Image (cartoon, rainbow, N blue to C red; front, top):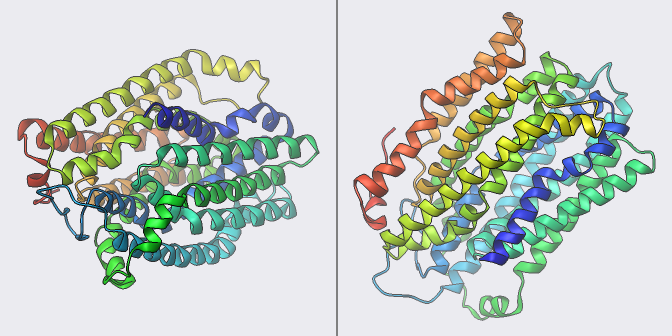
Length: 458
């Protein structure tokens, strides 16, 4: 556990803070427009992850069920065991085969969309601010890296579902360290936006090779090779996974609209310089948010297994520990950022800073509430239920609509973007999912098995 957490914190810091480590060089070598367009690249990368369609968390959850002894995959809920049962490696083999085919199709779709619509948008928002040749060259490298990341992403749920968080976090940490090193060297060699894109490509290649290496350990592979063929087909597994994956996928779309779409609106209406400050602020808070969730993320396979084993007491204790730890870590980090962040940016001589102090505090409160209800939603998902699809989509559409109307017709600025997201989320999502977890685990004190037999109504 301690080893998992050490690698977890290191990987989360490097994954979300890699750009911060090279920030002094980025600020000296890249103009505000170039830094802004890089954040647009990363936002589009987040948009591409929606093509995942919810398969990653759904696969990880079902891998955990199989390793917990389940012999069947169910569309709703999970198989509850009365006695311990060995792992069905034939079923595990079938899951791997299905995952590989699913992500091959997704990666192909991503390439087509990025090469066409993505290229058009990048040229549009950078027109008159950065040379088209420079942007398109960097964008081409970025597209290749993004497609590689998406295709080999099926190793992520396989590692997580097996509980190999140390290996997963180690590969993430080393790949992001590769990004930092390659980007820094190429920036010193005189490259600008292309340096960051090549660093991202190096990160993709390193990370995906390491994921393959850590998953194919000798003992586990021997068990897989010795297992007889499974009677369940790839199409059958796809049908089972798709039942909840499409709901998770819609939830991801909603999350993108809620958390990332405003970055694209900012780049279109407020300029790349303002977008750089806004995106930098969100990036720093994302570092804190994801680092605070390391312990909870490590425990997620156990949550699924405690549900299969019908062990409510251990389930409640693990959830309490993970959520309490996450909120405490985030609060401490947010206070440090608010007190010392702006001064640190000035000290390193940055031309692009964080947003103004009142907005910095406001965004911190907003992200804290997002963290709290995201943790609650993750708890709900471990029961193989996805009740938050409609609220996420409605909220995302409402935020984007309000933000666009304010920018397009009201002449509003960055404050309006933050206010629209904060208000819409506060109306429903910020309180609904924590309340549902409280009802399941504390007020009703239902067992994990019992609670899996019904669907929450929204």
